Amino acid sequence: MAGSTTPTTATTCSPFLDVLPPELRLHIYSHLLVASTPLKGQLARQDKEYDLHTAILRTNKQIHHEARSIFFGRNTFYITSIPPTHPANHDPHSDDDEEEEEGSGAFEPPLQLRDLSLVRHVEIDLLYYPRSMQTIRDRRTGVWKPVCVGAQRYSTSLSYLLSAVETSLLSLKLCADTRRYVDEAKLCNSNTSTTTTGSGFGGPNKEKDDRLELQRVLTGFYMADANPLFRKALARIDVANIALHFDFPESYFDFVVAKKVLCSQSLVELAGQVLGVRSIIRLEAAKQDSGEGNEVAREGPVTLIPGFASI
Image (cartoon, rainbow, N blue to C red; front, top):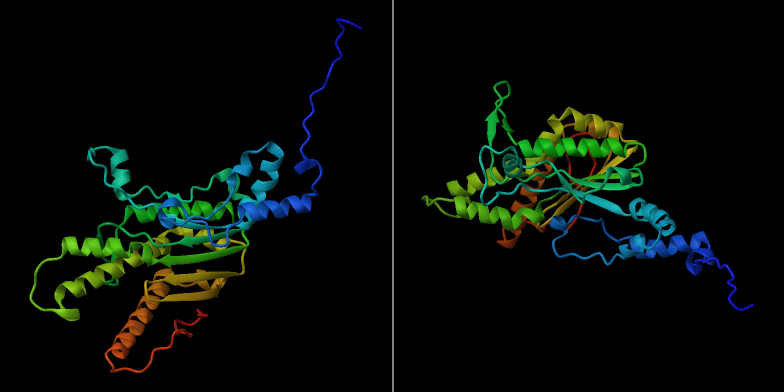
């Protein structure tokens, strides 16, 4: 009849949601959202790209709900500290500028609290590489102790992260990747070195730089050891074993340690022993290059304190 209208109902049909079974959709999400290597933050990954298609998370609510659990649950997140910055025009009396210069304790990638319940795999880089070193000597033991507010804040942030995933985490690895700091360390040493007599590896500056480098590498481990919040959070993680990985420009070390054993030991002592073994390996390699030493194995076990086993 002329002039009459027929009410219509707008319907949205999504073949992806209405036709494909959930199992196939999850497989597609995995292909689009799961990386083959741990996900790092922008500073740590530098120019590396992961080729993930996260735009699918913004398609609609149902797809977001289904795909979100895949993204956070099946990826491994590699946590690193955000180094302190030096503002160009900073006010020395400003709390904000002081936090920026000392380090806020923030980490990347910036996981949100609402997403942490979905995270199943985490790798934590304990390195906190301070731009300048401050140390005090323990009167009781005579051993140096780093003073680093940023590293202390970072270990506290890590304790909150571990507390948020303590019952849901399936795997945890503690790491120390020194390679991202190599160029910065060379620059700092070249800017602070002075002219002295002596040359080669035995010069006073070389020994001083090596000692400073060791202290910088160990600072994050020391502050984690000294932070009761971090130690408590680590002990409460519901995993039987914890992996450890140390990366250097010329070598790496892998370990798998029972959590109860790791929590009863000193992290800084373990890191110190790894640095010691690395020095021995480098010395043997140098002898081999000069034709004086035996051939150095490309891989193999190393001996550390009882309770730690390398693989």
